[in-house]
Length: 136
Image (cartoon, rainbow, N blue to C red; front, side, top):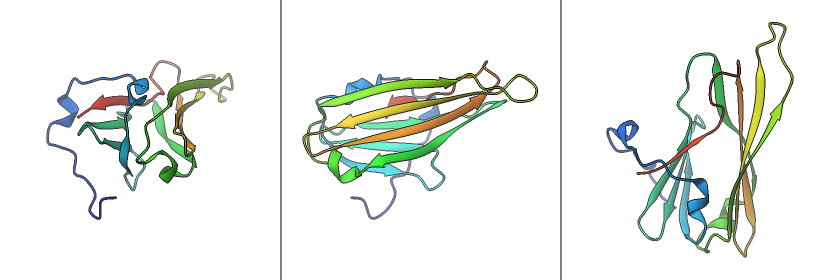
């Protein structure tokens, strides 16, 4: 694990390297870093690729990492056997009839164990409530 947090490269927002979360299958993650405000997660792989999971906040929505279930050490230094994304939506609305809520579950498993990263999002239904996943 890094003693010092990795700094995102300048201009990372302009990188057009969108990937499917499932591309982690078969890779080996040697380091996992989540920032203090839970705005992004970095995956460092042994093939020297670095992936960033984040959400670019927009008007009328809020998306954040709500929970990480499992032990992160269970996915480190072992090949990823499963990398899946599942979405669950609530039909609840606020008093204005506008607030949708969804959860996106990002599941990673190795032979040692698994973790599930749960992102929660609320919006008026017009904005994305899932995380982006890019290669840096």
